[in-house]
Length: 387
Image (cartoon, rainbow, N blue to C red):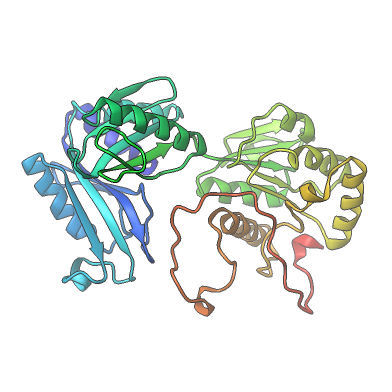
């Protein structure tokens, strides 16, 4: 939703009706996961994508019909469809798409305002079963608006949605007609909108410059921190949201870190590395990586153990940082680090897809702080950034 936020805001402000298509389910090698959106205005303008191009034409047609009738529709697209090669997902996946009309009277405007202000909000929509299709309940941590058609259902969904919102998770929940648990009469799709996850980069060097740009492109809110004022300057890091000139461990001590936060230590100096890593490894961060050679790693491990860091905490550390791509330049190294962050987030193997079988795209896999996968030794020279 964030990528089409400005356009949807403009349409609502102008009073332009539009059809909003949302992916509510994905199976197999579907290219976009639940929550992906595409919107079609009454004038025929299109923003967003639900499949990366496979079924956009078919969804466009459905959206125009929804605008004409005012009725919400649910559609399924997959390779087994009768018209697979014209409107289906030839990649072999299947997606369920809910298409509903939106007018200036819709509550969506308040949801978009919350997205713009980085205020967490969840949108719960009936997507199947006995309740009216498309009924919507908007849920914040301190208030709700709208209804799914039954007060008991509203109460149950509100409780569950706030739990999903706290975890930044999106998914479909099943209920009885009045919100009863362990029943499947009503399907409700809960889409969580939370502020972008953070990337904290410590060390304002060339590698940080490249990684900060890559992190911003991946949708992270990026902060670069370094104690040296000559290097920690905004003009050196035009892509970041914040540049901080402060000792890394002091900044980390006063900064909120959650289970989606990424921490990358690129300072190459024990007086910076050890204090900030000692603190970082005791946070719930999703990923903690540090640059340096294997010799440096051994020395750093000893220093961290002297500071009371446990073996379990050390096991969370990606050291040397990044995947083995043979990277040499700062830009290549940034790709290596980003690849490892993505692999941890979605549970990928890190192996070439050409040598694997099964689904290419994975959906609804929560981000975790799992320890690094074992590395395979090979008789070649180490990557430049780990020397």
